[in-house]
Amino acid sequence: MPAGPLTADETALRATEEMLRANPRDGGAWSTLGIVLRRLGRLDEAMICHRRGLEFDPGNAGIWSNLGNLLTDLGRHAEAAEAHAQAMRLNPDNPQLLFNAIIARRQGAAYREALFLLDRALALGPVTPALRWERALTLLQVGEYEQGFREYEARRHIASYRTRPTPGAAWNGGPLDGRRIFLSTEQGFGDTLMAARYVDLVKARGGRILFECHPELRRVLGGLPVDEFVPAGSDFPDFDVQASQMSLPYLCGTTFDSVPPPVRLHVPPEARTKAARVLGPAEPGILRVGIIWSGRVTFADNKRRASNLSRFLRFGTVPGVRLYSLQKGPPEEQLDLMSSRLLVTPLGPHIEDFADTAALLEQLDLLIMTDSSTAHLAGSLGTPVWNLVQYMPYWVYGDRATATPWYPSMRLFRQGSDEDWEPVLDAALEALHELARARRTAGKSCGA
Image (cartoon, rainbow, N blue to C red):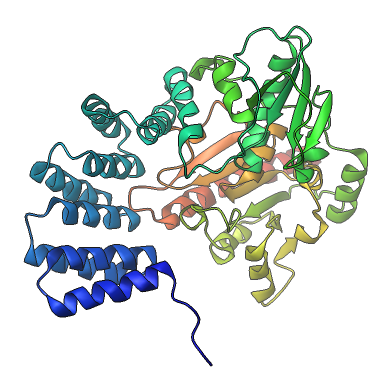
């Protein structure tokens, strides 16, 4: 059977290998091979290549920077910082090397160091959209929202940022005076849920709101004061001005101390009836705990933020706790690998959209999960949610605290710099033991 055409990375791999066969002491070529292997996900092999490159060319700043990028991927942040520092000692004014160091420091949760390097990069110039975007993400992570949201607008000028350009005049945040404003969606479901809290503020400006919405969110956002829901990705409606939903925090002047409360979600009566039938009546003294261990698998960073079902099963060992899976997508198949289906009740087959999920969450006592759009849903409902977040989480979750101003009912359990999930899950397990004991005690008191 004839082989198919080579991919770009396979072609680059073969070409680089030919260079090394001709000159096996070419340090730069070894590092280039490491870059290709990193793109292919062969990180251990890439490490050998960069180390080999430094063996032959230890004064090559680019190889040190490439090594730092790889160490960041591996979660070895202290080593990555030193590698990038060495690159900048060798070539202090190279914009690309400086940019690589900035990304590594932000991903290593060294946000203040990243901001220092960003100021240096901006002073050196040129001021690119990518630099402004990195600065935005870093500022938002440390709660400096006023500057962060202003810089966040740079995302529209980054070629790799995938969003549909919206034609027409941009809204500046001022009075609308009856004009039609189109609020376009971008990014994920969770971002739409988060940004929906601003619709009331836009409505107060006196306009007619056309809100772009994915069908999965249509029912649960049905209570928004909008004049028309526009199906996501459909032809643009007639409007006078437009704004992205994710630009609303900036346009509405959000600061860390003025985050609006979550959106009021609409849970249809038929969804509540269905949830009550699926879950059955609550048992006195029993905690009904929902679990989700993975977000959308197509999300680029999901491998860092996701865990697996086997690790979440420890929560079922707590006396008085019953587990319910709200997991959707391919990770839901992990339930089929369990020896008994009685240990975790699968709710995924009963979930058609976010309204179904919301109705189930209303009747659960707690949701324990790794970060995904359902965290925004639970937080908007006011359902207690314990969000287990990666070392460098989404900016909404800040840099250190166990709470976020965006969702008062959310408690954050954070990974350490080793990016190990075990301590995070153990901390949540201990907290669940305490909560279950309190529930059992309260149940006994009521029965006395």
